[in-house]
Length: 253
Ligand code: G
Ligand code: G
Ligand code: MN
Ligand code: NA
Image (tube, rainbow, N blue to C red; front, side, top):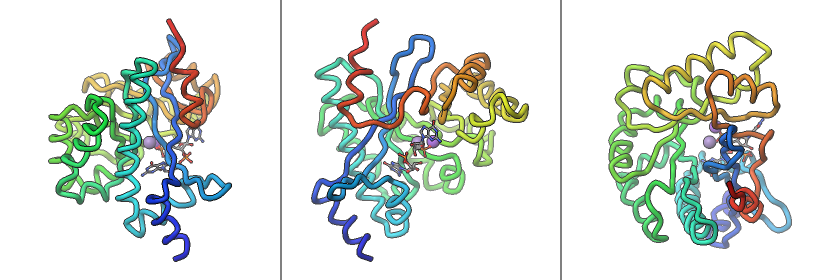
């Protein structure tokens, strides 16, 4: 209960920060986007999301937290576009709870517009499990988000028993290969079979594909050979504070 009220106050007290993990195009070794991940600066400690996101989900605080993250990511996209010509997108994780808001799309539109960045500056990550659990709630919002130019990425793909028939009808732009498959690449043949299938599916549906959780060269090489060119993971960078992202932004051709 104490943690809950402290977290509640954290929003008003500006104690939340976003760190960013680059998405890397392996051919050019350049950042082609970044995922925003929340941290809570509580006094001198930086509380990792694992220690407060579950509580936030239980208590509903995840809704104001996510709304804050959307605004902050839009603000950051604007700042990077002004200083570095950043024109990729920042991905924000969007839990299912948010789709219960009937005015979700309007809210996202407002958040993005406040900072005068194009809608494509913000990408939304929803988990495959969350999507499939709640299709009827989520689908109408996905269509409206697509209309205003906010792209959708399906997180943790391969773990959530997607109806593939449904997938072809959804206005999504990207699949993120779940790290559980990436971890096993080069170790078990099943993992490369799954990854191959996901890449083929993405190709035939015209979706981009991103591998998450890439930690070593073996995984990178297998992914590259299988046709996945965009990766995210500790091999390239951990999630880092915004100032540290600037070294990726400053890279010239
Ligand atoms: O950043 P990290 O490395 O520790 O994040 C751990 C988990 O916390 C992630 O897998 C993700 O599920 C969750 N998480 C981190 N940041 C956010 C956020 O901004 N919104 C939501 N909904 N979840 C987040
Ligand atoms: O999929 P999700 O949005 O939950 O992913 C974000 C989480 O993944 C964060 O906790 C982040 O720190 C973690 N993460 C990012 N890259 C790697 C990696 O290479 N290895 C592992 N184990 N975790 C990673
Ligand atoms: Mn994610
Ligand atoms: Na993920």
